[in-house]
Length: 322
Image (tube, rainbow, N blue to C red; front, side, top):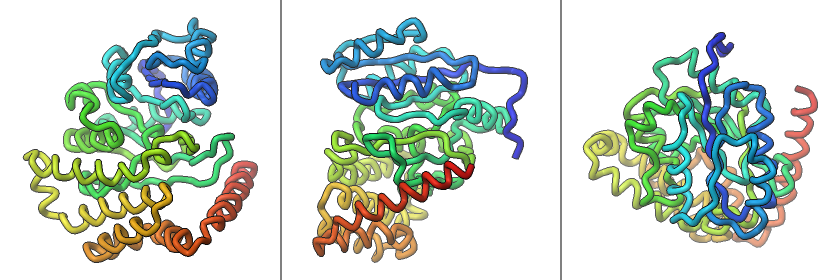
């Protein structure tokens, strides 16, 4: 696959929604501003933070295309506010606790240039802790719309969109506060092909204040609401009906994953059981996390910390060798 950029360098717009993430915000800003791609428009939408975030934003204000700090109704509104102001042919958003890896934007532009039919391109992402140490590599693959409906996840910071397709599907749906990115990918996949690039483009930060930890049990509930919603939309109803068991198994597996991380292993194992009854391969695809739920239920959850430390060392060794 030829991913070398052409001589044309389209404008890329990046939006960062921010709210009281001052501990991580500067690393996020720098990861965008220090990209090697020369034609980036960077917009920051702060939700009236009170933790010093605004002072950090002001420090870099002369390098931003636009920024604002004002109250909003949540992340979807903040991201939409920035995306609707963006002028770039290619757009992305990076939450204020995540980071781009060096060269990510250049690689995304090259992918779009190699695949002019693509509405969205995406890569892999590291999972990092509060101190920035990687403890997992979240690998994706080439997904179909049915795969996305079964909650095979594109890691949001490792995704970039063609603005014309984003405008066609009308941005993020503010009715969803947790899975708005998943729904957006589904709607874009219904319009244009998605293209996976097997490169690591971003790092998603997992910490005690992150939504995946503080609201983990809510992810599965919103996933069930989302699928019920899509069943009523003609563009999705036929696809769901044709692959319903696998898709519903994916919803339950997704629920179980977040329940495990939220410290509810008993509920997680019930969800894994539902997934297995519906479509065994889907449930078994997440066997490591299911095992973690079993260990947590047995009071052996401290083994996870040991396992994460082993993965951190292994990822560090791989990075040093590359």
